[in-house]
Image 1 (cartoon, rainbow, N blue to C red):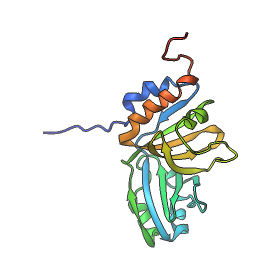
Image 2 (image 1 turned 135 degrees about the vertical axis):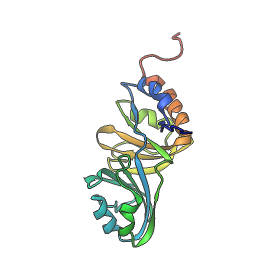
Image 3 (image 1 turned 90 degrees about the horizontal axis):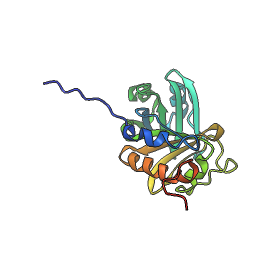
Length: 196
């Protein structure tokens, strides 16, 4: 007996809900990205050389670039803890292990899905459920934080031109999509309630 298992994006059933938020908020799921949790106590430079992107030196930041594995983001999650974010299957644990002298690397790709957020109302919508001040003067591009968004643990990346990347646990992804749609209601053209 052969079983055909197909991978299904965590927000596949919510694509229409997310699309309806445009143009106020552009929300696109980027499922199945490679996510490697890296603990490094020694050899930071060696890991950066393998990736083609240096590990961030400052807390709550991320570095980006294109190296031998394509486009890569390296997120600072804590002292000596980083998250490597790359295209599906682009980089693997065995690629990084030789560069790590003291530490570990674990594939955590199945843990979270990734959502790209942009649009003129995106900061206002995120402010409904996030305590982080997303004003560019406070959280400039390159900022990366672990925080709560509407009681859901997320990793939030602040990118250029008012664009954000949200990493949310797959089990919370449907809740995140529903919350996002609700929080964006006042910014979309058609409100779900009748006008008075």
